[in-house]
Length: 153
Image (cartoon, rainbow, N blue to C red; front, side):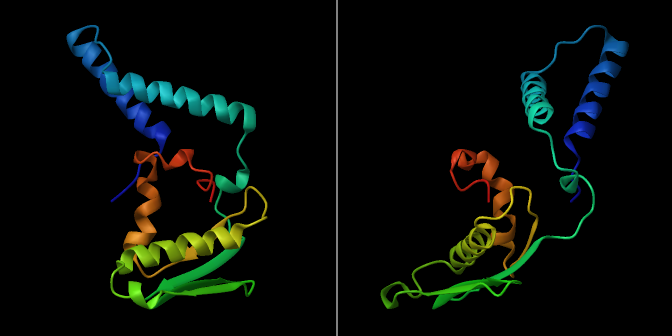
């Protein structure tokens, strides 16, 4: 699966609307297109006032690397600085919690611990062996988690 950047997506959408207008006359923008343009205006307003680190735009190496894993009996993680943590699943919960949930929790906790009190624009490379835990943050924007205090991690 390939991903388009926001600017390419909006340009393609605008060009499509322009082609329709040239072929069939003036066109009304769909509600979705209007919403996307409004969102893009909000992004531009934020970026024009707060800026973006060049490190987020160009290829660069991560500042921190961490690994996490879980089993039915426990979970844990560590980073390249030697900081490590582990938690044993209580015996009455063994086998009752999804392994995907445990691996996801392990990845989130490891990232949060690794980034605790670090610089704002730090880049982290987080390894996990679970595709559900790895791809979950991609879907957070649809769940309202952006309003959570931990979203910055």
